[in-house]
Length: 264
Image (spheres, rainbow, N blue to C red):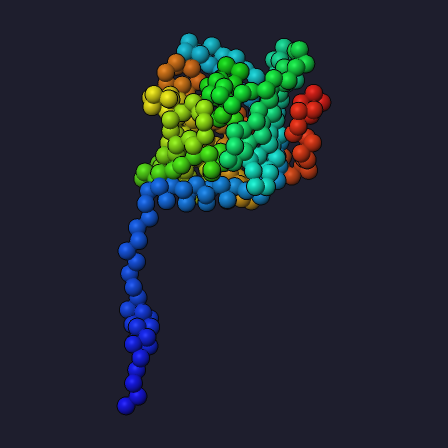
């Protein structure tokens, strides 16, 4: 009788009786995997511009309204570049914020003050401050690069018929104003529909709610309304997005410091 090798018997057993994996994905691994998938899905749009209306409300309900334009460009192997330009009110018309987001190093941001024609660099340890008195901090206005946080998946929730992954993320960059963020990531939109922000004492500081999602370029879902509530002051900021236009052919020269002075 022909002798059958042990190797042949082992290979045969693997095909007949598949080995059940004992590996269980950790919450940290799952949180990172879902966030990488989110950011990978949301790449490829090249650039866009949009109109924004920023409404600030204090605890008494009094409002200040600003209109703006935003220009953004994707950058390979680094964070995005963006410019926010104010159109009204008249006393700050032409004021602009330039942001260069980075994956591993500190972001670069410059504020152009049109009234005195001066460019002011925003230091890396001052980005937790409010942007023009709103409930958005300067660090909230840069792209959320994966490498800037560590992650932990908490649970899955179904809200209004939509399935969401709840993920906790911890800033890994210096001078953040937050100890952690908790985001509710829509599994279909691949976008967060809610984010909770916790301050340096780990107290619940703010909540960002995003609604009225619209699909662009047959793939990307962006919210038309964003609502940031400060639970400690009672103030809130509403941000409305309109007139998205993609693939405008922007270059890096449209996002340098000299470009700030050319904007109208």
